[in-house]
Length: 296
Image 1: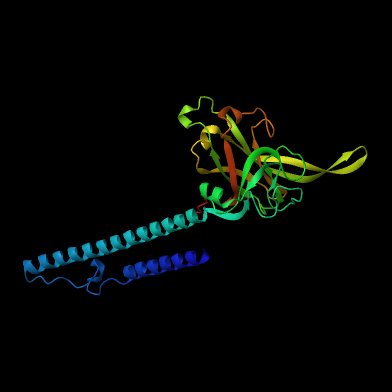
Image 2 (image 1 turned 180 degrees about the vertical axis):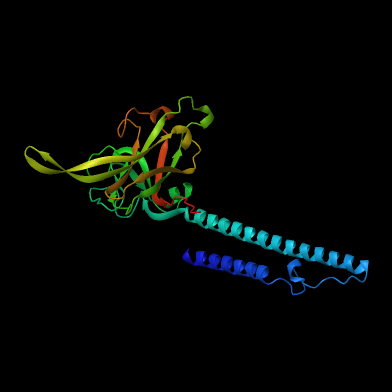
């Protein structure tokens, strides 16, 4: 980006130099009115009239030269600011940080799951090639079920990885990629209830006096929440659900998925859509969002 800035700055400087040169070095045949010091010859009226016409032409040439230089300078400055606007807008785009697979090859849903990748409390891993082809996927995905999985008996479907993905303060985006199957068609849904709860949570160490001693407590901060309704999964396509938030950087982060199935969360909103409902999770992707800041 610095290279682009230097390039456009150089173009602008060269343009201004050429503009100033055109002002400082007009055509050699042009003379200002003040430069004519000789007294006009009184021989004929025609000579006097010719001299007046010549002076007017010279004045017009000077005017148009100055006008052209001013217009060129204005256009040059406008182009420069427009280029800076485009550079700033380009830098505003998201910066990819990390992507976590919901069905990674480390945490398979057994009691050996570890931090560093997404973990599981309910559901199962789908890695059958024929079923993945039906889902339009090549990599394994995680499917929601009420069956416990992984270590412990927590309420979420997917949680973790307990990482430090946000190294500095700023604005961030976390995107959950989800697909639903077997839901009622959107136009037939009369109660568009939430079926999933997505959130971004941070735990950070805090030291507090307890019973005359200083204890280390893990303070929990939920930075962003997104509720996915049945109509949003009824199309049977893979969809991205984005959570945007500001954070101050430090802490241990996790990205959690809960289901309104009567086990993970209550009430059981999924059951009202029948026994053929299936929900799949592909990945969670993290981005940093640069602010658009134009310095005039």
